[in-house]
Image (cartoon, helix red, strand yellow):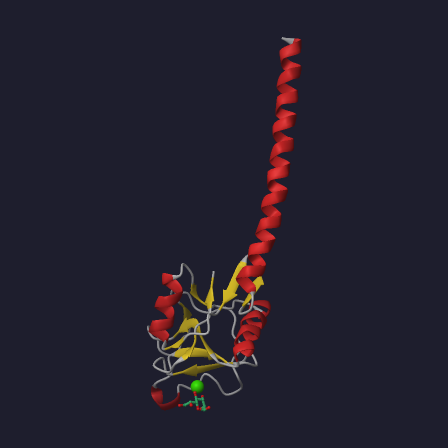
Length: 160
Ligand code: 289
Ligand code: CA
């Protein structure tokens, strides 16, 4: 029993060592794919990836395209995430629609999961619901937000 206990420990040691090697290889490969995902139109904040492919469309079109790709429209939830989205928009010199609307609850902007927003970066004087027809949110290349008609065409910017 004593000997077999020792060989069991040695077996486990060699398994742990093999797993450590595999983890190291996986981490290196993950770092490579993070570079792929963010070159050139992407940014990461923590585990979130913000990415554009340069496409432009109206809100519904963009929303659908992000979901189809396995993500959702970019939804910055704090200043760091807003900075990342702003940098991608600035790279393409185009405003993008965010995953925020007041389509269901006029005057109260919500995330696409129907929760009220907990972070915003409105331009001074916004949201103003110009002509009573602005239920979507665009982010300008300077990072500020404006409510805008959902039928306008803006840059596709998804988060994953
Ligand atoms: O159609 C109105 C928009 O073009 C924008 O016009 C002005 O910049 C401001 O009134 C904005 O709030 C508005 O979204
Ligand atoms: Ca507006």
